[in-house]
Length: 178
Ligand SMILES: CC(C)(COP(=O)(O)OP(=O)(O)OC[C@H]1O[C@@H](n2cnc3c(N)ncnc32)[C@H](O)[C@@H]1OP(=O)(O)O)[C@@H](O)C(=O)NCCC(=O)NCCS
Image (cartoon, rainbow, N blue to C red):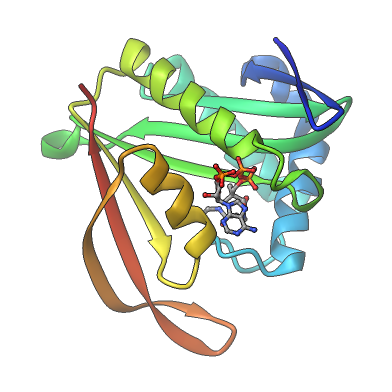
């Protein structure tokens, strides 16, 4: 599907096997987030080999119906990624959610759109009982976004994340998947 965000025409689609050939574009995306110091768990830039391996694992999880990934693309450039995956064993009713948008595509509604699409699709395809996510305590923008979708803060775990030389808290947020 094509959607226009503030004049930018973006293609929104699910990740699939053909993306294995696009490792360079995914590498460019993740490393752009690392370079700007985005509040995500990845700290060090990845290599092409590492990214190929990660993509292979993701495709396997998608094939096994344990994960869904929605991409936003501006031609060959990845503009945003949103994922939901089922946890394992006694936590397999929990759908973990993660989102990121490339810096130059922020603040134009893409994050909101990707999150609403992933929640809809996850309910249909993964059928979790509850959604869960983790966010840095200092990441108020992401917390605002999650609150808009009904996520509630249920825990603050101190000193879980090392970010720019400081130990900061991890915030856990959940939402019923009714
Ligand atoms: C968090 C993130 C995904 C939001 O994506 P986005 O496309 O910029 O978000 P949107 O434009 O759809 O805005 C969604 C909501 O986020 C909040 N938001 C966005 N930009 C904001 C800003 N500059 N200040 C405060 N809140 C902001 C608002 O609540 C906004 O809703 P509104 O437009 O109704 O006010 C994006 O900032 C990002 O990728 N950041 C880096 C990676 C990251 O932090 N990921 C989350 C890890 S848990």
